[in-house]
Amino acid sequence: MRHPDARILIFAKAPEPDRVKTRLIPALGPQGAAELHAGLLAETVARLAATRIAPIELWCTPDPQAEPFPRLAAQHGLACYRQQGADLGERMARAAADALGRGAPVVLVGTDCPLLDGDYVASAIEAMVGEDAALGPAADGGYVLLGLRRAAPELFADMPWGTDQVAARTRERMGMLGWRWAELPALWDLDRPEDLARYAVLNRVGG
Image (cartoon, rainbow, N blue to C red; front, side, top):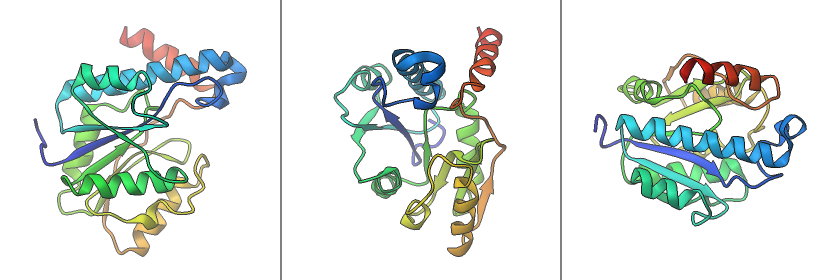
């Protein structure tokens, strides 16, 4: 394993219809959107686990025992944890603080970015040598990766999640903390109907 002291935290929601990929429901329907979410989750776990960069933790909501979490954990040898907190920001802050107690740095990722692979995560870990954090921005103004060497609840509180201001606000707050951070190339998330065509092309090229 290239970075055994680091931790990769994958934040994942159970693929329940009407609760995931809601912006894609007009194009795919509730069941289709849930199936796409399940596929992205499985692909993300498989891509990162195959490269053996660092220990991976699957942070799940609402229940780590809901499928497909136990199956993915068994298949790839992952530790599973329940997300704790009233909102996404609090859940991310608590997970980061918890994982930092077991190793550093930690890298927080979601499951919506088809191009997020082991090399990208490894570049974040390696870029954090001498830095406090790493940011992998999303093309829509959010981020696909956040790497941390220390806990900072300020990075997550009162954040306008799901908007194009998330990455900019995160940079502002890291600046207010006096942090230095590495900036990675921007990637795109699969969140909107117009992203489906790009994902289809990616699958054809990859398959």
